[in-house]
Length: 453
Image 1 (cartoon, rainbow, N blue to C red):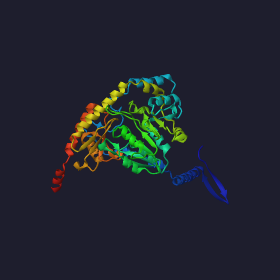
Image 2: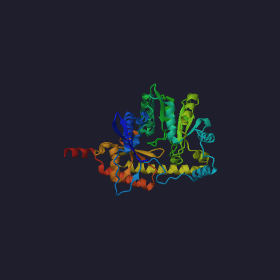
Image 3: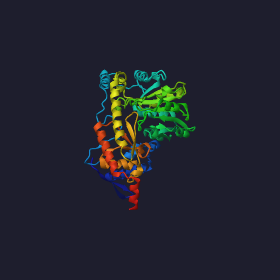
Image 4: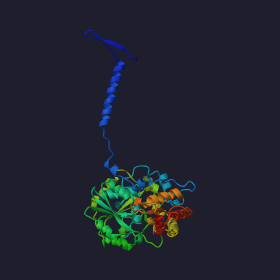
């Protein structure tokens, strides 16, 4: 309808009013009210989101990573064993997934803690006479990361503290700090193949310590603890641990070493053990993990178990298809697959350790398992760089080799190498690292002469 004008007589005076003008005025008033409302809004992110920080992302995102265009990039920083395609999972594992899909039985929601049958399978797989497990002792999760999240969250309140290895996996601190939980770092000793400094760990314990995290085999160190060392941790000699939360990502151990679960050695310490399919079966994207509850003396009691169930109900976690395939994955995967994977990781670790051991200024620590190797940098011999971040940053710029600076694990002047790359790539990377170090290495006498000049 077209706008119309009309005249209104008031006390003999003529006032002309236009409908379009009235509409415009009303619109201005409405916009002004909306602007006023917006000005009153004070939308702030939650304290949890503000306190959440992944140290690896914080450091890597701030690095100036410009590879040498004349050399193809070799990334020794990625903890995903599937990236280069040289470590495929076993055909039996793939067939188990195909069968689960074809069955049409696993397309719906599962219980938040996982299917009963799938929990039984995991319990049977990890049960042993010294540490028996039943289905009720297993919670299935969306990868090992969710298992770690649930374990920390069920044990700790804001203001409590947890003991975390240093160097250690950054996720522990990321999760804890976001929940208002203090993180205390206990030292690992590189000269003792990254064993725990038990006296230092004991000195950190107070009445608000609710969780001790032990990572075995270790990310980022690749260490595997001896039975004696694990017994010392559990016995309290010299350390007396509180509630113990054992978090291991995979039980990949090189020949000559023996993996020992802490639960099989513990007579009274309650343990939440977290694991998953990711690294041992080489399928990190399938997102299936678990918590194993070891509590011989019922110290956790019903409350912790109920707490884990309630926390699992916040978000339905583990993939149902993988749960449907888990029985075949655990029971039908041939031992040759595990042996082949371990053999490759050990061989690459030996190549890396051997090559870098003869590089002036570097001190690699030979791992005993997992897929990582830590290398120390004698920074006094590389005066151009202030720290490991600058060192690894320049390594990318000149040689197109990216190693993760150990500052990301709160352990400066080291860097971590992931040994899952193809062998020829590992050899080439070590050659480039050697060239880089030879170019920038300075003896103490060289430093003095340059200062004098």
